[in-house]
Length: 129
Image (spheres, rainbow, N blue to C red):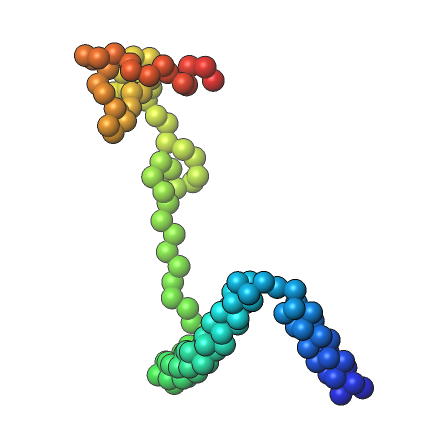
């Protein structure tokens, strides 16, 4: 049964290749052939890479010995981000300190003209939103 399925699959693949090959333009056929050749060219390098990595892993396991096999992993260090007390609650922020009038902030866009001498050159787009 396996041989029959293999023969039918091979016949289907050959028939499909012939039908597609007769209908494609020469440019499209060149693209398909280039892709197939590129994939085939990458197979030996991939095999060498996989073999080299397996050999390296075996050597590493031999060097580490039984301590790695017992499930010892490096410690996990968790660093809390800025703005929390360690319990997950945010740090209260004092409003109105160093942020201009009524807690608003001002930003300087790099390359933007200064508004002190020229005024706004473009209409503010954020006021419409």
